[in-house]
Amino acid sequence: MPASNDPPSTLGGLLQRHKNGDVNAINEILECCRERFERLARVLLNRPGAARDLDTDDVVNEAVTRLIPVLRAKPFDSSAKFLGYAAQVMRNHLKDLANKRRPQHFPAPGSDAAGPHPGADAPETTDDPAKLAEWTSIHSTIDKLPEDQRQLFDLLFYHGLAVAEASDQLDVSETTLRTHWNSAKLHFMRLYGNATPPF
Image (cartoon, rainbow, N blue to C red; front, side):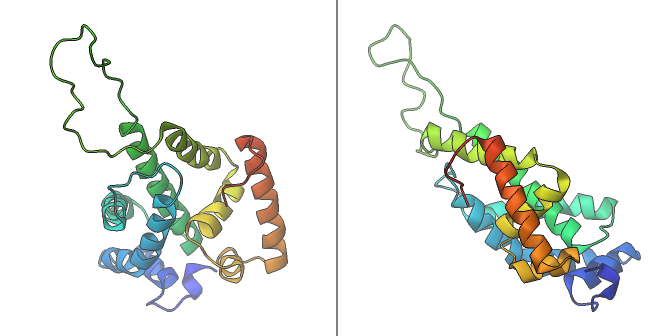
């Protein structure tokens, strides 16, 4: 749905106010979307490999921090484009965390390496390496999809929109959206190379 058709208090209306030069709309946009961001963070943190010591607020706050300068620099033409960008920001943040938390390899006990084991007092913050790799691979595979298919994953998979709501955002019929969504999932599975879909 075009932002210009939305009431001023909705996300589309807020984005239109921002596009018209209302800098105060930025905080209202982020507040309006916070519940969506929290739901998105819960989805991402429940994926395989998510670090056990992270919570939803950590991820949401980081996403907001990354979105603020972007909103200050440019407007978004629609709610769908903004939500898609927000999903991309969250994906990138979680992938960055996954890369930082890859397990380190330390000398085996009794080896010739000098000094105490550098990980002896470190808290356990890394999940099983295989799960961590799977989690990173899922998001990286989605990033490789064409923009129109990636947009469907952003809205339906990450933000958890219902088909009716997503079809409204994209201004297409529900039947058309379901067809495109099925095609996007099939394309994902061909790239992902796994018979068991993660969704």
